[in-house]
Length: 197
Image (cartoon, rainbow, N blue to C red; front, side, top):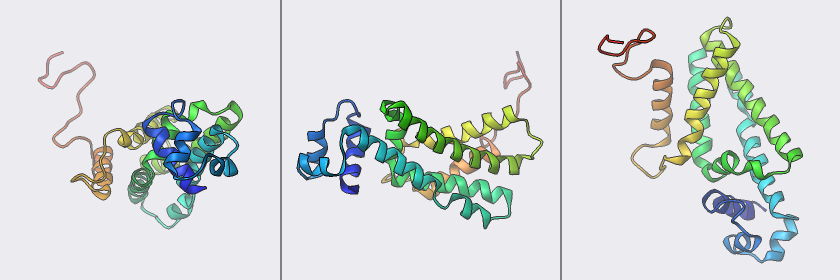
C-alpha cells in the first residue's frame, strides 16, 4: 500500500492529480492495475490516503516533543526544524496536500482541513508563548501564517541534494524569522531607507 501511495504522490506532485491515471500509478508502483485496486477503490482514495497520512505524520509526536522543551525560543526552533525535516523527507506528499487536496470530495477535504487547523493551533500556541500571551489574535494569525508559508513552500525551490542541508535551512529560517534580515532596520510608516517618503 505504501509503495503505491508513494509512487502516486510522486506522480501527483509532478504530473498533477487530474492528469494522472490509475494505469500511471500502477506502472510507477511496478504493480498491476488490479494490484492498485486491491488496496484502493479509486484514484480519490489514493489522494486521501496520501494527504491524510501526511497530516498524521505532521501531528504525530508534536505536542509530546514540545512538552520536553521549556524555553519558548527553543520551542520555535523545534517546530521549524521539525517542519522542515518532515517536508523535505515527504516533499512529494507535501506538494500534493498544498496543490492537489482541493480535488478531494468535500467531506474528505473537511477532515484534512480539521487536521491542518489542529497543526495551526499548536504552532500558533508556540508563537504566542514566545511573543507573549497578550499578543492580539490578528497579529498572532499573521505571524503564524507567515511562518507556515515560509516553511511550506520550500518544496517549490529547495533541493535537498544541494549545498544547503535541512539543518542549515531550518536554522536560516529560524534566524530570519526571529531576527529579521541581517543589517536590516525597522522603517517608520511611509518612509524609505534613505529617509525620504
